[in-house]
Image (cartoon, protein in one colour):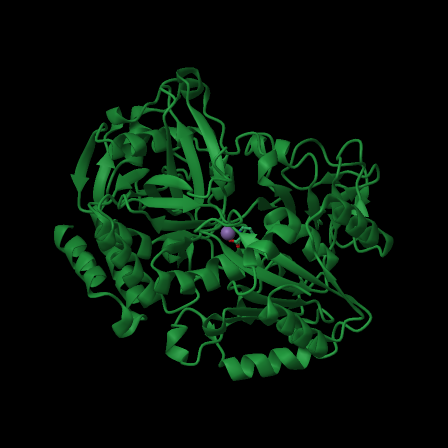
Length: 589
Ligand code: O2Y
Ligand code: MN
């Protein structure tokens, strides 16, 4: 029982529906972590890894049909279908509660229902939002304890009448035909049933901090975005912050915690990681944009993470980390493809089957030990580059917003939007080409405005209008930029070396924000001049640099046609100002 009557009544009502044997309130204490870990290990739901090599680390496997977010089973349940917009699946709230209720009813018999009060953002900050997640998964509880601030301080902050998002999660029988991820923005509620994995079940993350928060932020006048936040400390010790949105497979997490290349490190540059996935941004009385990362952990993808791509992450995940669906080795450690070191001589794969390197399936294809979407959950404070401002209630001042995409031929390495409105156009027309590792045709262009396509909890036409309105309210808005690390030469080779070298581009961006770097005006925006980039110690040819910074008008003319057909779908809720931006681009090409 708490002081909050509405909360108590809701927990009782949900327990009546789900019928757990027991209801346990989460307090966030260390003693509780030890007890829950012991319970999870004793039931076999999780296992302890070697506590000398990986102190505090746990291992978990999910069901083979439950290894990623399921966008096709994710719905926005609004009274009017058009309020969900053309890019979301829609269900009426009545149907959502009825269909969800049928699956939830009695589904927790023989299980415990945990009640997790959690805060997205520092407890008590004006940026923060409180949620309460009910779940029958101990794995979810242990993950939420890493990803969010949980327990008694949150309940205290909630008091007797504070607002909170009602989050209900149940594993049920993890049957994909009885899986639904339902958002009820008008009721500030989320129901997720039939899954035990990641973004489907850690309801503070994609469901609350993006889909529900984006809906709330529109009426409350702030931004909930799918963006990393990083601070760049220059040789004078000045730290400036950028927020950046990239579609998946563009290295967002790696960028958030990169190590400066030798040339810039020697000059005194340093990176401070605030967050790798979500930014909540508000306008302050100074007319500027301030941001927090509402999370306290990383839910990162394991394959491809190694000491070259992300040395800071490798240090972060050495302790107190939950590993999901990676290879379990015989000596109680973990391994994944494109990680560090050779594979173990033998182990168990993500499905628990004996596994050896070099194993082939019936079609002669290598059998992967780790699932391609296998993950680690680790506390942000363990990251060597974590920012001392993560707990600041006021967040960090955002100097620049960066949009990015993976474009082999189209977009130059970096350009600056003419102004906020043009920047919104750049974000709204953001796109990426598929890599070999993804489903679909190689090179197929996928539009993903502001990297929010799967996460905007309402009509995206209204979302763009909200972005335009935010710009009108700021006296000193951040400048907006676009980057593309993936431009290729004639033989398909990457022209830009990537990884830590990306900091050189961010240095240019911050110089631009202070009016200190050269650029040339082109139809798409202000493009960096070759001399304005600091290339100290970088081995790159003049020819490659020229290619990286070229704007090819014919290619952009074709692009405007594709942008127009994408914008068309938003109908009369699409802002006129963005059509005008498209016309202006067409006119200047
Ligand atoms: O597949 C999942 O459930 C995780 S998806 C994810 C995890 C961490 C950060 N971002 C994402 C994403 O899909 O954007
Ligand atoms: Mn993400």
